Length: 177
Image 1: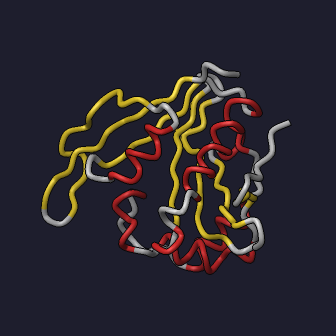
Image 2: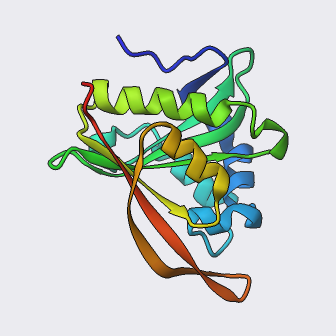
């Protein structure tokens, strides 16, 4: 049986109490580049989103989980499966750790490990993919640690700080489950 609890963190469903956290993450302009966000979200929209977060991944085509330290209910990050395609057995993966102090502590690594196992063993996916900015060294290192392979480059894909940036597409094929 796959568990979404690791040695130091666990992944849980979003709760109404996560409103302030999700609002802060979605409205943090520093991470808009990696989330393809361009406008702020209202508390009302986040509240509506959380009211529907209970939907099954087969209906919503996405799953967003809160990343929490084992000794706390408080979310420190989010990890997503998006563009869930059960027919072709694939989904995209995204991850964000809110505060700099929680980064480079193994939280992302443990979270991604749990999500990969869940995706392959529980959801029966054949592949996961990730879109990562060419200059996002921490994410490039994280995903390649788990065997994600670069399968392409989207030239001048994003426009930030008055210039265009490449984005890489990575893919992990399930060979274990």
